[in-house]
Image (cartoon, rainbow, N blue to C red; front, side, top):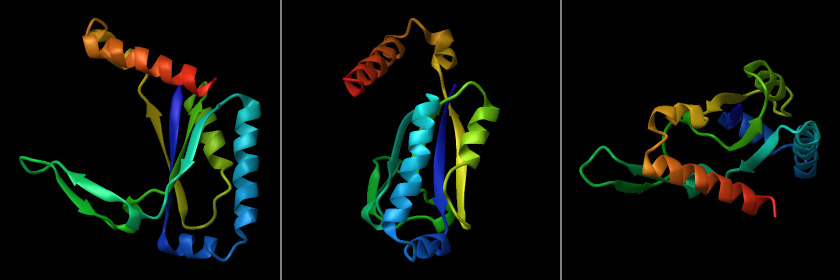
Length: 143
């Protein structure tokens, strides 16, 4: 099972992290990522830039409307993610609980759909193309 760990930080958590030596944060995150790699559960992780660099594409009108960030309430924003391949929800909880985050930070953990979610549509052209695309992306990543 694949899970996405979505990191949310409050304004206070972001301010507190700026008081910590950035190399200390890099080392803590690096050690966490390395432990997941050694356990064979790490698939991907990325941090995101400040929300002010983002933009929103709103599909509520007839044509999509693009607006600059910031957007939404701070508690609705996320700052980074990990994608893990684990054997169970409990293992995902275990890894999420080990993340080197402090007060004001939360991880939203969501299971990623597997091919079984589209089993009813296995003959659909785009379901087949999607599976082939994921396989190609994984092959390119592991070169």
